[in-house]
Amino acid sequence: MIIAALLLAAQAATASTVAACRVPADPQQRVWSLEQTGNSWRVVFSAKSLDKPRVELPLGNGQPVITDSRIALSYASANGGRAVEWHIVDGFSTIDVRVSHGLEVNVERDLDPAVDLMNTEGAIAVVCDRYHPQPRYFGPILDNDVVVPTAPDRSREWNVAAGVAKSVNLFQSTSGRAYAVQTIGWSKELTGDLKLIGIRGRFAWGVEATPVFAQLDPSTIYGVGFAPVVWRWNFPPKPRWSAFAELSMGGLWTTEPIPEKTGRANFTAHWGGGLRLRPRGGHALLLAYRFQHFSNGNQLGSNPGVNSHVILAGWSHMGPPKGGPSQ
Image (cartoon, rainbow, N blue to C red; front, side, top):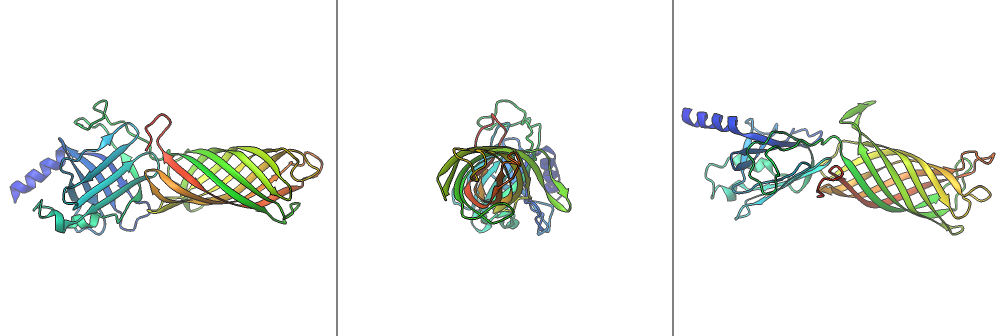
């Protein structure tokens, strides 16, 4: 017993934690850590549901791929009793752990039965921290002996979406207009976790281009737009989805005046929000709503405009900094 305790203590002393990932706002406070001892790697799990500080899942001959902007681990045992798909990048990382003690104990008799609690039941979104130095790494593509830390609280996002809109009777806006839009946006989180009037999240600043604006009714008009100001509030991510709210200001230039008897250049603004669904490897399905306004800003002595409900669907990618490898 004493010898076993000493061996465990020696192992813990020489182990190096490369990354630790958690589910935000998780009542069970689950944390998955990637540890290295010499040439061996393992996943270490802790949670309130455990009756011990931690439980370990050795990865056999499995090794992660580590660069300065990501960690990728793909491992499966021969009998299928343990499998790990782990992608750690700036922003929304993902982990998928599948382990069966009943299968794996036939191969590894000392495996802790509590490893079954590590299961994620599919890929889930997590927030990760990386640590350095990493003095003894023998992975396949590391250029030097130090793992450069990333900044998971400074994620960048690209999104592409298309949608349709209908105008409404509100103020000097009239109903009866229908148009379609296609947008391309980029943003960067400028803060870590904050709490604003009791609401947790991160603040991001972005830009958005509208290369396609097409009014379909009551007449056919085309245009392009650009918004240099997109203020976005990213709420803490959930395992299967994440949400955001945003405000935007910019301009719209059209082939004919909108509304009629005004000008072909308009100021634009919108407020709204959206969901990123089923995130995997930084990619997610994007669904969004916005209340869109555009008008001439009283440049012509009056300010008729168009107010519309807009529904968008598209793709979002929360990824590494510019120049980093893609997921």
